[in-house]
Length: 289
Image 1 (cartoon, rainbow, N blue to C red):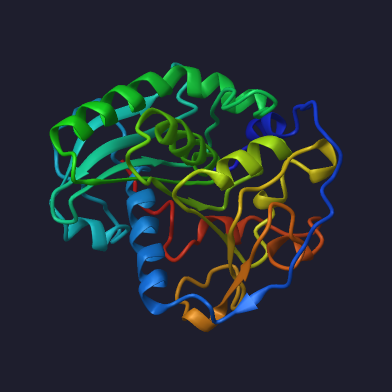
Image 2 (cartoon, rainbow, N blue to C red; image 1 turned 90 degrees about the vertical axis):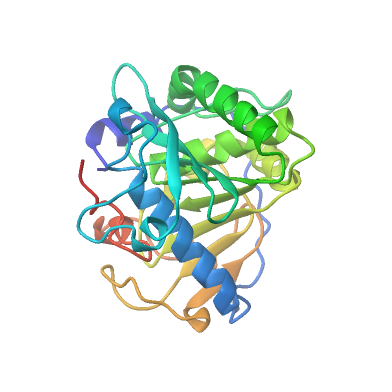
């Protein structure tokens, strides 16, 4: 899932501006049960990306083994396109959920993405190369589906490096289809770009629900000292252990701002394992091809 090669990609240099020192308090209990249920739903969409990414899944209903995505299996969700680059670094799908009237773009982990969103906005170089490989399929497929189903919502979601991809997919789609309010759900995302990029994406119409889990170290990469920032807002699953997947609204801390040390990043990075990274309201990688 999270490999040494991917960690190396994360640590590539990025021309950056100075550190942004702003930080606000963490707020507990401001998430509703309905919002938490929605987080669980998108965790299932994301889990399904691990085993519904091969070309032979096109036109098929989403299914997952190991009870990995029961909420989505209960929907009539059909895969319209699958996503992969030549090096198999990226994987996922574009699907049509006729039950929820939703167009979904989902990415699994071990991935990267993007390009320049606006002048002065810089993105991690590894992400940029993979977005070049999969971005056209995402944009063309979603645009076509939107023309056929204009009333359907559009959402992007992803886990780990796939969360970085989901963030970038959402940002690009917001530019391309400005009449739609497009939300992004990211699970265990690394920092994606510089301060200008984080502020730009956070200010676009639509929300970025950036979900982190206890002591998951991946959201602390690449280091802020290298010029990377997160999008706003963070929802930290703050209680329990690395294997905990059941949460209540009171377990979720909300941290606003693109550089807030009161949620996942308040603990030291070193010494933590990656168990928390693979458990996000479900066993996120349990679905196997």
